[in-house]
Image (cartoon, rainbow, N blue to C red; front, side, top):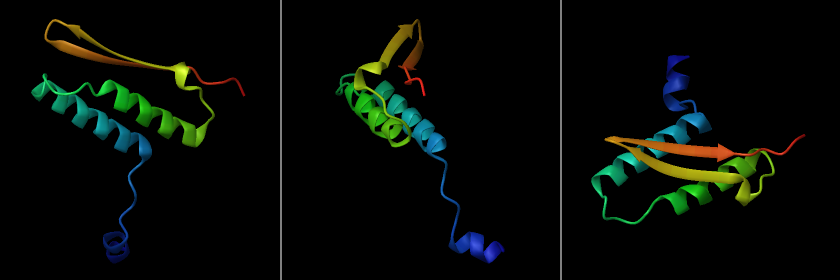
Amino acid sequence: MALLSFLFPPKPKSATAAKERLQIIIARERTHRAGPDFLPALHRELIEVISKYTKVNADDIKISLDRQGNLEVLDVNVVLPDN
């Protein structure tokens, strides 16, 4: 069994991959303050990922980045349709 799991490792869960991507984006943004704003790209990617699982309107996904002292809060609100 160990040989099979070595040859064919399990695929990471999409939630774990999304969390890692967000951490990378936020870490990069902290080091490159003068760089381009990542929120529009993040918004597009979230629409793509959520659309794989349910029909969602792009206007129903709101993203904001708030700075509170030395902390940054990424707020993502998604309104899912009633099914």
